[in-house]
Image 1 (cartoon, rainbow, N blue to C red):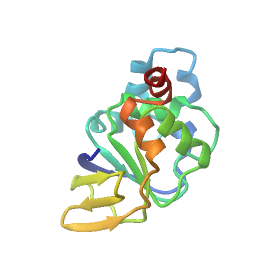
Image 2 (image 1 turned 120 degrees about the vertical axis):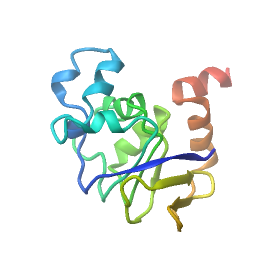
Image 3 (image 1 turned 180 degrees about the vertical axis):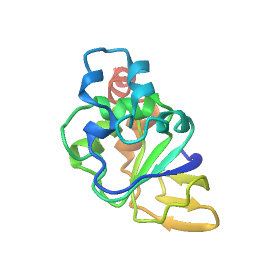
Image 4 (image 1 turned 90 degrees about the vertical axis):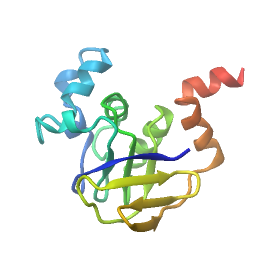
Length: 156
């Protein structure tokens, strides 16, 4: 299950309130979330996320436990998020909503092609190769199904 796309570089400590501001959570319309992702940090960023791989600093997804942050990124078209560390609840929310995440400290080169394989942990950025801890078979199954709800539907 490889994912690829151009790198979008973000810093450390990106919290869920920055990913999707609370003022947009009054609606359940996920397309609204997608258009407003990262709005308070960079209003133009959402338009660059379709098909992209986010390469960020440590502690990605810290802050509140809002599941909508991972959903907003997926709905905005983010293919994968790579960071040295994630807030634990964000990590699980991402997997459970079908957004691949990989823990790896690697330099980001804006716009460079990223090829990431959550099953093997291999990450290629430009002509450099890095390795993350591979995701478990169960997590890969959840991602392949499109999220935890779909995973359990298929298990029935």
